[in-house]
Length: 429
Ligand code: IMP
Image (cartoon, rainbow, N blue to C red; front, top):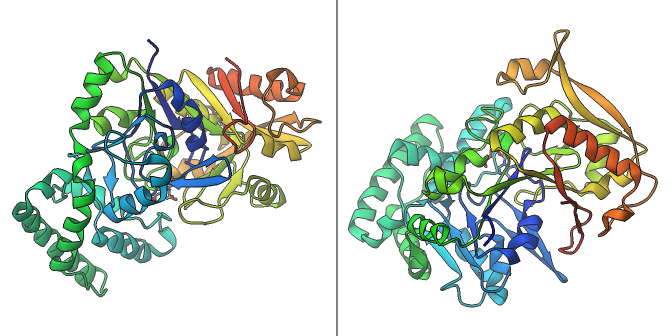
């Protein structure tokens, strides 16, 4: 009987968690998505097929695994259903394979509309959201005007709440943003009920299900979305997502006690460099040829939005912070092979702020803006690591790179990913 495991992003998302979760899934009974929504984009390549998953846990691509979307996730039903269609060739019948929390909140079309209007109104100061309605859906949840999956089992109650929510959204759209609002209660209601029919048999109390599974010693793989530095509480606020994308979101996102969750191991996933989509501080960002080379070699364009990602050197100040707040037991470094193309590799070990050295990631954006990375320069490696599967074949310079990461974060590097395929990885444990 092994431990459960949490896999989460240690940076600003897009660390390659999808592939890692997919390849570790065979050792687990359950795969769980517990926060965020269809803003996430997890790419898994199986044979010659590429699956871009946004809501459904990637365990759906492995036979016999139970996949849970728990209460912390906000669900756009049209996207969930479209995704179910995309994976049905491998998933087959979803009953017994996919479970959806009755406490999860729904993302409605008016949330998407408000996301766009809010971003537009911010002008230069926009967050650069994925426009998937995530912020407005979580706003409704915390304002207690949200609608949960459980509500759909009681159509008159649902319709009542929908009417109020749509009235409110219409007021905001028209009066605050001066925009048109054409969504009718009838249409949203009937679309939702039609879609709900398809998923109703999959709806359950996932908190209870997980509690029972964990107490029985079954193994659960928790799949984080986005990344620690986008966490609503601990990230680079306000340039963050609207959920707890760090391990801090596990208890509220699953409805499972911290005592049970605390028994799981936590592995953070980090690219061998850093990327970020959307706006916000990024101390090691490279706006030069080196940044462009990272983007080209790493194919750094968003899975959900197609936007070019901002690129820069590995930031060990941010990673040290992520290691601490997540209580990381191990680090998984992805896209190592992208660094094959560089003669010199830099990693930030501290920031310089007004002549002082900072080693702890600051909360204030004003301070962050002025932080200059203090780099340690390492030699690039003289041979390709692309697709390597054997740790004995790793060049010495890669070991120096790993040693630097371990020394600076005090977390062992347990795995390297050397290419997009399921098979392209090396366990170092
Ligand atoms: P939202 O989550 O769509 O509200 O976007 C808020 C911020 O999080 C923006 O900077 C997005 O680019 C970023 N973000 C949201 N989801 C992801 C993701 O899965 N990967 C990377 N960045 C993301």
